[in-house]
Length: 383
Image (cartoon, rainbow, N blue to C red; front, side):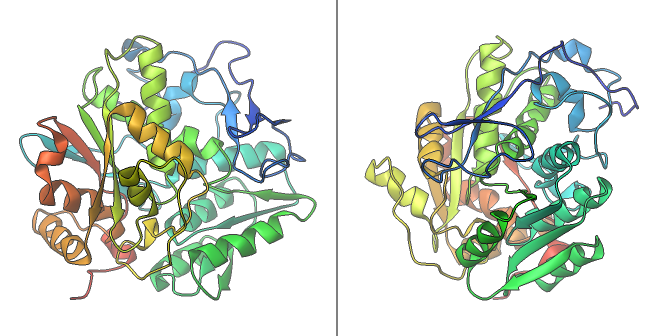
């Protein structure tokens, strides 16, 4: 993809957006004083936003970042916060499976896609303080992009978070709050702090602007494949931000007549913490919380994902499925990818582990897996 300094623009009014609760329809304007969750039910927001069509032929010569898809993004105006994120390579692993190297993002994980959009929103809203919570990668992305935006932030992380990730968060100037307990305890601590006046909660789970950043993953696939998508898009799922972003993008591309059909979304969870896979297999619409457990795929170990209903619906509507992987399969996949020249963290290899363990799950379709985080963040899995 050509990298230039040209920032595309959108038609007037294309940035108009409103928060909307998918559960009860409650609405709120996108402003600094907006509540971080639905005040009626406490659930995460969706965004009422009409994405414009991105014409493939218009992309030549555009800025070499995810902002090249400006028509589809809910922020317009002057050149936004950026570190040149996006436009990551797509490389073949087999005759039918390719990998998108999202660990080559500026902070070494795919979370940059959502963080840059949410950081730009925060910059425009100019809050008194910004907080975020993360198992590591989202926190490093927020720390970097909020620093780029000139906003100090505090990142809440579980006490067991990888030391390298904690170091990276602090290196960007963010304050780190270590929380005793698991990922859910960390989220609760951050949400309690988010209620303070003047606080912007940069939540990659509750704020839908993050999802509109992650959807650029699929727009890039569409561009890289010359205006088509693979038969299956395989994604790791914890809180579901990449999967829901993928669902947004495929719906938009299909609605604009830019793809003939929507690909299947194949969601991958660690067997040790797999509430969504269990609900999918049981035919349930609600996700029952499961006990927290240790897994090498720490980034997707979410016992009770707030957007569980949406994730299940997105997978079912796409004709996709859920796969789970064991700890041994994760270790084997990490070693295999390293042997192919790709050093990926243990969470980031989950999708490759799934498709190599269950190739028939793709139903003969071509597929793309994301390699979401760099191996330098966690090292090789022990065992």
